Image 1: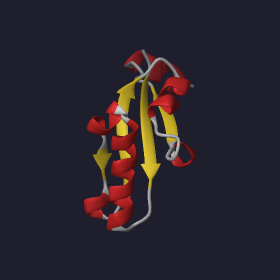
Image 2: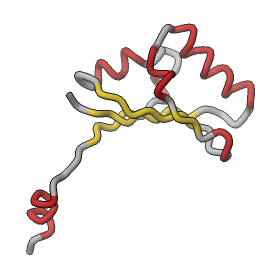
Image 3: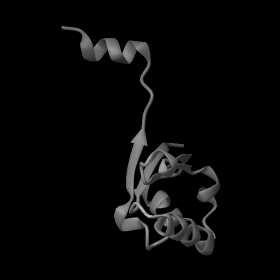
Amino acid sequence: MPTYLVEIPHSETVSECKKVINVFLNSGSHIISHAHWGCKDGVHKMWFIYDFEDKESVLRAIPPLMRPQAQVIELVKFRVEDVRLYTAD
């Protein structure tokens, strides 16, 4: 199953941080328990890395209010042999 990194930015106020949390909690989305937050360091974004069937499944797990801001990235691990193929001249 593919692994995805999801980044969702929000504005730099405490009330906006709380709003994002409440949107996820009120939607019933379970991924909030996997979220990492940058707010304490002044980076007002949340991230989570999670396995999903596909990008559509990722988007369904994100509350509709947060979907327009969400960036969804499929993560891939390359083996050393794979990297050598791309760097060989």
